[in-house]
Length: 116
Image (cartoon, helix red, strand yellow):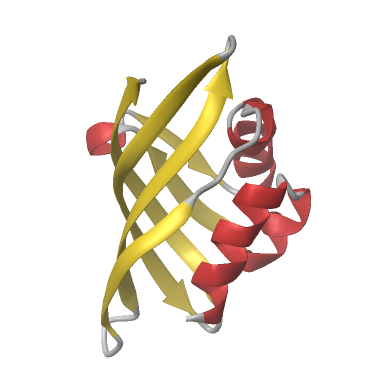
């Protein structure tokens, strides 16, 4: 799905235009089991600035995606490799996208990280 590709490309390129693919009332849940939750464009953009945009040389990749198009839900396995304090960090997990009218209404991340 194009919106999912835009999301991952924006992450890799650290592009703040990612906000264009979210609904003004979108919910963005982060960390295993939604430990952090951001609602609305302003909270999402602040999260994006402090996290994905702070990663050095991110390289997120979609490993596999599954969809339930009737329910507008897409479940993607991903891996991201980036640098932290001159160490390689790998994050691997799943992102659940709920997409309505061509934009993300809800996103939930579930992941684990490790250093090489």
